[in-house]
Each structure stands twice: as C-alpha cells, then as structure tokens.
Image (cartoon, rainbow, N blue to C red; front, side, top):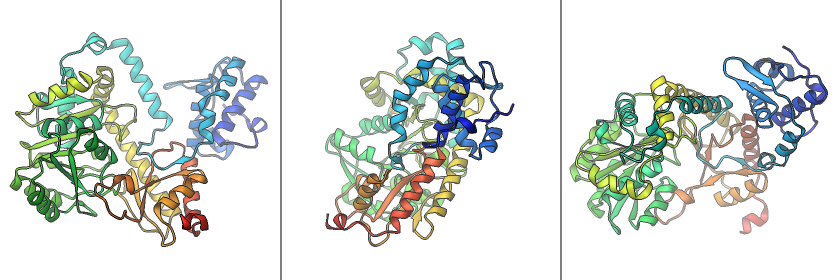
Length: 467
C-alpha cells in the first residue's frame, strides 16, 4: 500500500524518530488502522526521500513504541495503539540517546534491524525446541558436547584452526578466552610480549593478573619479526599475545609470509603463543592463523561478536594438547561454564549458515563506511583495512590528539586517542582511532564524520592550545 505521512511529520529531530512519531499521529487520527500493512522499506523511503536504513530504523523504533509488529516474511503491520505506550517511550532512555554524542569510539559491529530479527527468530526457536541441557546444564565445564562439536568443525573448516572437539573450550567472549589462556600459562610477575600498540583490554588484564606486559615494535603488518626475536632474547617471556588480523587500534594485518616469519621466531625460542583472532571473520578468506603453524605451543581465541551482533558473546578457545587440565579449573573459577543458551544460538547460526551470512553483510557494511570515511576525510592520512572495523587517522600539525578528543566531545562526537592502547611509556602517536560500527544509524555516522572533517580543517581553540 501507499501512505502519506507528510502532514504528520514533525519539523525537527532525527528523521527516523520523526517518521515513527508520524506513524503514531496517523494512527490516532484514523489514517492508519490496526491490521493495516505498511509499505516495504524501500517504497516508503522513496516516498519520503530518505534512505532505506532510515525507514528501517523508524520501523524498529515504532515497534519499540508498540505501534507496529514486524512479521517475518509478511511485512510490518499496525497494532492497536495504547496512548500510554508512546508517552512511556518518550520518557525512556531512547530519547536521551538522540542527544548523546555520535560514538566513533567503541569497537562494535554494525547491527541493522535485520540482525535483531534474526536474533529474535532464533530465540523463539530455542524457546520451542531447545534440549533441557541448554536450560539446566552446569557440566561439562568446557561446554555442551554438541556445541563444541559444531564449533570445532567450523573453526577447522572456516578459520583453519587445528584441533578436535576435545581441544575446544567455550567461553564468555574473546576477552574471557584471552584471560583463560594467560592464566593457564603465566604466573604473577612473568613477562608477556605483545604489540607496542594493542587492545586496551589486554593492558587492563595485565594489571589485574600482575604480569609484566612489554611492547614489541610494529609496522603496517603488525609485529616485526626481527623486533620480536630481539625481545624474546632480552626478556625470555613466558608467552607472546598477538593479534595478526586487524590489530586494534591500527588495523595492521599480517600477510602469510609475515605469519611464517613470526611463527619461525616463536618456534625457535619455544615461546607460548596466545593468538587473538577475534577479527578473523572481517577479512576475506586466505589468511591462515598463526596457530596452524604452531599447533603444539599456541592458544587460539576467537568469537562471533565482532562479525554478527555484539550481544552474542560466544567465544571459542582452542587449547594445545596437554594443557586442557590446566585451563578448565580457571574456567570453573571464573564462570563455572559458559552460558549454554548463548551458545545454542551460536550453534544454530553455525549450522544454518547465518554466521556466514551476517559476517558477509558486516564486511559489506564496513566497506561502505570505509569508503565514506575516506571521502569525507579526503586529504588526511589514514591506515585501515578495506573491511576493517577501525580507521587509524593521522592528525594535521595543529592538533594534539587529546585536544581534538576534548573539542570533538564538546561538539557531540566521541573518538579514541592512542594513549589507552600504548603498552609502554613514551610519546603517543599523533593519531586517533575511528570505529565505524558504534552508530547503527548511517545518518548519525555521517554526521560524526562531518563534525570531524570540520574540526580537522580548523585550528584548535586558543585555550586548548594552552592546555
């Protein structure tokens, strides 16, 4: 059907929210009646001269307000409207979010409304058909066998990680997996090597566990083999924790030749490897993990979080033979076992191909935002991967990173500086990290780039320069 929402559109506010409110007003005035089917997203987008994503978000917000119901395969339909529903919505945190800064600071996958529908559909299926073990199991500690079997096949076939179901441990996200691997190997005060710039979660973990984290020089492909060799000879580390694919924050990714060289260094020194492969699904196939080169001395960690939806905290830790009896007590002490319900969703998505579909969609969406960012920030030096979650942006001469971060926040934009990713003391790189998935709404994302482009073209305010 076709509908005319133009008379009901408010003049101000985000477009998606204006459309949702227009739907509410059209229902109140009898223009839209309960049981009416709304136009497809693309048709309404063309009618209102907005993007399809804007309409998708408007329909999602209307569903939160109780105005409509999305039925898979059937479309979006008008519900009966309770006057209290919209009032409650207008008092909710969703309104506060509209005034919040545009967030380009958080590592987060892009999660359009269709992803939410996938999640809800699977939850309904699990509610109807899940085995009782998914609801009440508290053993085995490593995870339910059928979930580990499916995960093991996927890890082997898709990511190239060696091992069998007996070598896999289910954990509550990749951060939990890294913690378990480190706790298995490292004692208080031991030295662990990592990239000179690395995920701030690992830095925080090193402080929590009392280990000595040391940074190794990196380039555009990540850790430099010669520098790693020198650091191994100098520090004699207990373990090395590396992210060979899309290192956070720089996006550095090792080609297979670099991976061969790094593996050779680690094999020569006999040093344990913990491979954080959380971004593996954001790269096209062709890169084999370091763990495949060092199966007897490597712990491999990955998850589905970065490539599907952030709420699916399904982490997979692959443990080398002979170490599982050391890892399982750490798992039992930190969470007993990973949440079976979460892994039941993951299991079904691995079985029916949803993981592959959503990962492919994530790469496409990130590629679009990578290109848009390069267009909006043309003339500025930046490093990134074509389907990467981040952009590592060099600053023009007038700005310091902390000054830009402060000024951007005052103007409604959140960004990250290099400081929180630095392992060792020293002058930070004159760079900022832009994360492309923190804002699901393309219009807000573009708004953030517009703010940043304007700031980069200006001189810092005098008071900031004094600070």
